[in-house]
Amino acid sequence: RKEVEQDPGPFNVPEGATVAFNCTYSNSASQSFFWYRQDCRKEPKLLMSVYSSGNEDGRFTAQLNRASQYISLLIRDSKLSDSATYLCVVNGPVTDSWGKLQFGAGTQVVVTP
Amino acid sequence: DVKVTQSSRYLVKRTGEKVFLECVQDMDHENMFWYRQDPGLGLRLIYFSYDVKMKEKGDIPEGYSVSREKKERFSLILESASTNQTSMYLCASSRWNSYEQYFGPGTRLTVT
Image (cartoon, rainbow over all chains, first blue to last red; front, side, top):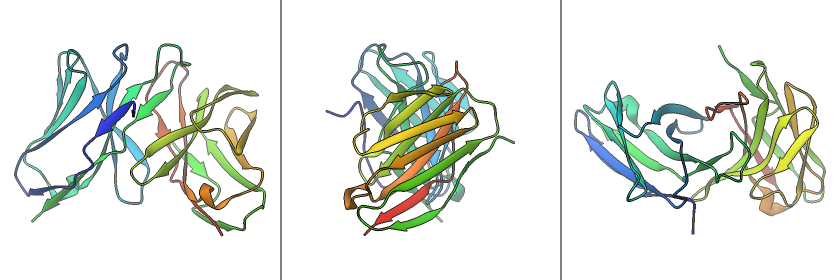
């Protein structure tokens, strides 16, 4: 079983619409959660951290549900430039060295005009 | 501006060749990582280094080795390249106490 699982998509979203997607993680002891964004043929870049209380960064909202072990990302008022693959990222097991991360395979979002 | 650079964007090698992939970061980060990224599998950690001359195996270290002689440089070595090592290789770095990783542009390696 993968440590971090995501729906690969693609999620086809009209410009201006809202899109939301989840990822599930298997390690109940995980403490740190992130969304990274990866544009086509580019490297991943940190989009936002995910806090227990949920957090917003402009049009992006991230939520954490510890009981069900999933995190979510919601994008409001989608822009063409939001088209990318969104990687769900969780810190490694407690026994791992600090700084190690587990990456999901990504959810592809395609925003259409 | 933070920067992680990788020695090549594209590389084509023959089966059995020794391959060196170099990564350099200019942020004075303690941690450096090598991943490979394959469709449907996401990023998988090959090796990790938290200090000069220190290394730890990641999830898929077989067939790879690493070298970190200087803080800013982390090299990935394929001792004898095989076709199943055809992949995108990504280097990343982070501060010792941070999970935020900064990635290089990647090297697409093809082994024929």
